[in-house]
Image (cartoon, rainbow, N blue to C red; front, side, top):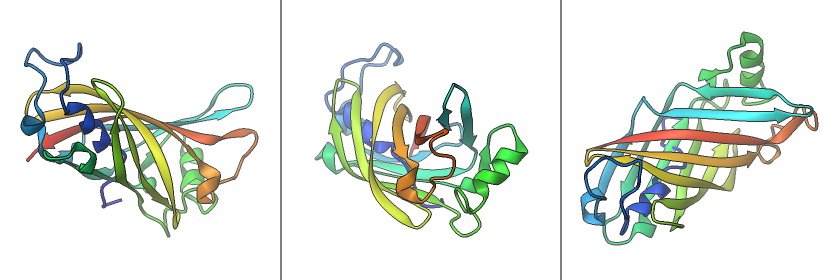
Length: 197
């Protein structure tokens, strides 16, 4: 996903009038003007996922290649934009057999659909350091509206970080294999770091 995905800039909404968060550094919480600008998602970010299984267990993994940016609008936080892309070919679960299956036509079909892309369409502040990100997720040739919850975790005026979570129904993207033994919901748990330009 050379495009930018997911799901992340919405968190920036929390910067508008943000009150210092316990996890933040000693510097006072940024003003919207301070935080405004363009951020590139860094390789130190973690894009993790899990699909539950009846009786416990399931499949857990991560994507090791992704790109993205988020643009914080200083005049209207709701107009901020996050774009994120991940490459399903880089999925890792710790088991080669499962990884190859996930890359196959039964799931990601990464040979024909090398990217999964997310672009925000709406960012809504939900708390002092939290926000909901709504946007279009495109996977396997299908685009649907999805929602993610974001929490600001760090800020040092050049680097900003968010914890982003959300569930995606895989049947909406033609990935129904394994249901009902395996859950229809893919739970994303992401730590996203951005470097300001």
